[in-house]
Each structure stands twice: as structure tokens, then as C-alpha cells.
Image (cartoon, rainbow, N blue to C red; front, top):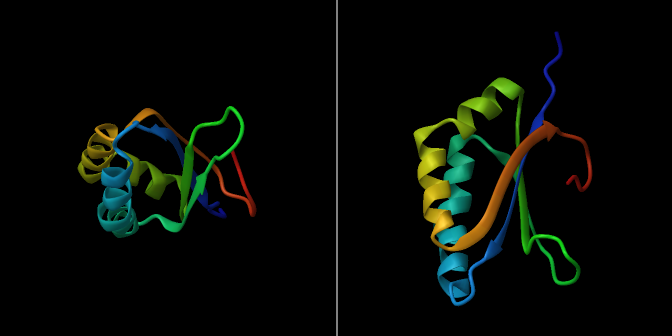
Length: 103
């Protein structure tokens, strides 16, 4: 049976006044720790116009089992808890990974 890569998609808005702290956390903690957990091809998008969340981020796991292991890990909970001090309206979902931008 062929395993399909899974994309973990996250969305949020940065809290006003927390921008500097947020960027420091994402660059120095969030991204490296996501990579250590096993998410590859990390991508971040910043919305400058429209009604979408300010930030959309994604990473790819090799299969659904690995994706579930990552998002159920204590490390993931710790990361999203730290992120929640800097952002609002955090959402996450998992979908089959395809090439290109996915919502």
C-alpha cells in the first residue's frame, strides 16, 4: 500500500504589540523544533490584503501516522502553547499533500 504525504496546515493572527517577540520565537524556536519533530518543507505565508488569517504555515510529514505522531507529541503541545501567548485564532488541520499552495 502506497503512503501519501500529509500536509499540516496552521493559521493564526499575530497579537498586536507582540510582533517582535513573535518573529524571534518563530525563527529561533518554532521552525527548528518543527523540523526536529519531523515536519519537512516548512512554508510560511504572510497575508497583506484580504480577510484571511495573517499567517498561514505548513509542513509535510511522510504519512498520516507520522503526522498524527507529530501533532499528538508533548513537544507539539508545548510549541503551540508558547505560540498561543503571541497569536490568536490558531487553527490547524491535516490534508493530503499536493504540490502548490493549499488552504
